Amino acid sequence: MTSKSKTLPAPTEQRWKPGVDSAAWKRRGKGLVLPVVALLLLEVVVRLGWVPPYQLPAPSDIFITLSDLAAGPLYKHIGASVARVLLGFAIGAGLALLAAAWVGLSREAEAYLEPTFAGLRAIPSLAWVPLLLLWLGIDETSKVVLIAIGAFFPVYLNGVAAIRNIDRKLVEVGQMYGFSSAQLAKRILLPAALPGLFTGLRSGMSLAWMFLVAAELIAATKGLGYLLTDGRETSRPDIVLAAIIVLALLGKLCDGVLAKLETHFLDWRDAFTGEAKP
Amino acid sequence: MSEALLRVRVERKNFAAVTVLRNIDLQLQPREVVTLLGPSGCGKSTLLRIAAGLEREFNGAVSRGGQGGEVAFVFQEPRLMPWLTVAQNIGFSAGGQYDQAWVQQLIREVGLEGFADALPKQLSGGMAQRVALARGLYSRPRVLLLDEPFSAVDAFTRMKLQDLLLQLAEHHGIALLLVTHDVDEALYLSDRVLVMGGSQSSSLRLELPVALARPRDRRDARLAALKGEALTELQLAHVI
Image 1 (cartoon, rainbow over the protein chains, first blue to last red):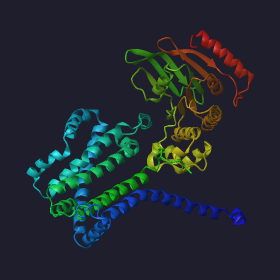
Image 2 (cartoon, chains in turn orange, yellow; image 1 turned 90 degrees about the horizontal axis):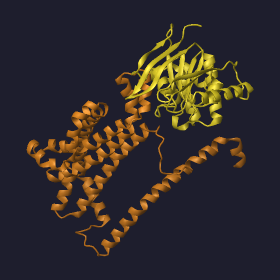
Image 3 (cartoon, each protein chain N blue to C red; image 1 turned 180 degrees about the horizontal axis):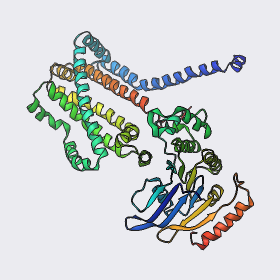
Image 4 (cartoon, chains in turn cyan, yellow; image 1 turned 120 degrees about the horizontal axis):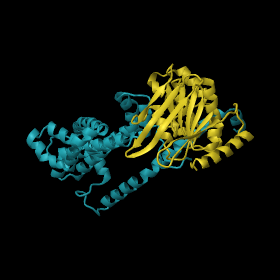
């Protein structure tokens, strides 16, 4: 082994990699400890009869309910909710990026628009619900608009901050080369603002999910929020918990996609990663 | 003497109500190395920014010599775009379709072979400033303006970079106008050292010619003697 690795450095290189992987798995394993222990404890507590199952169903019962739902209407609900979130988020985040670019790049636009946005932001977004129901009815439009409002402000705020935090010294490099505004925006401002934009998009996405539940709790015939209401009205905490689990998984999935995009596009960042290199 | 490559006349430059520069007439001949030397806050960087066209509000004029000739600027900090590789940073002014062969040549000339695809976060301060020099050379300028380019690196790296700068200027036939507050650096690099200072508004207080052939030796007794003279002059001019 030793003589081999001396003549061939490549195998030692390959031996390294599983080591890194197993360390990563070890980290993930650590994260699983708390939830697994909690689930086991709950199972024991419910099975022993310390808590009545109509208040807190055993984790195994929730799992059975979930697989029952998965065999039937679950995908219809997931499909409806995901479609609403994605559409609402796309509209809200898209408008927010435009507004942020406008306000961030122009002092004039800031003077005109920023006070209005600050005022609108002060309205708790759920206060729009009655108005949206009055204006747009109880079908899809009001839900999508509510989600769009929810996603708008975090994206807008982070977008403006991202543009205003761009290092003036980098912009000056572009000015020195005589860049036009379009070139400046594309070659310096957009890449430099990208980290802040991603922060905004990720918090906008999580708010979109929050507002989805709010919208569906109030009036819906399908969707995960409807499943929550349904579970409450039929006194089925297992359905409520199953819906909560699905919401958590979907929220995590959406954030995971954005996080992947973020690491892909922002690989160049020289940031503290929170861990000492081995 | 041939026509100046660059001429900067500043009758007056104000920041708000304060006049920082007054009555300055500066000329740069082809292949000449001129240093602006002065204490912090004397307006030497402002004068350089005026020469570069980054500062436009002043009374006076900047004229570029007969054949024109591009002017490039190297900042105090490398100011590399952190999201671009070394090669992309060097060709930054041309965007995506930069001249690959020319960039490769510049990378070799500044001694960064093998780092073409590295990101700025992987570079040391000295290496980053080498990239900044290469970026300044990309547009094939006739004049390179440098604002305290080596003040942020350690003394050893600074000496290496000074020699590199002189080699590059010699090789490409570029005139240098350099701002510094380091008397040794000024004397080692320059043909002429222009001392700036003044109690309220700055002007060019005195000119010290350095008539030594290159390559110079840092241990040269004549440099030491010049430094002694320079310090005396600086004291007489109340700059220090």
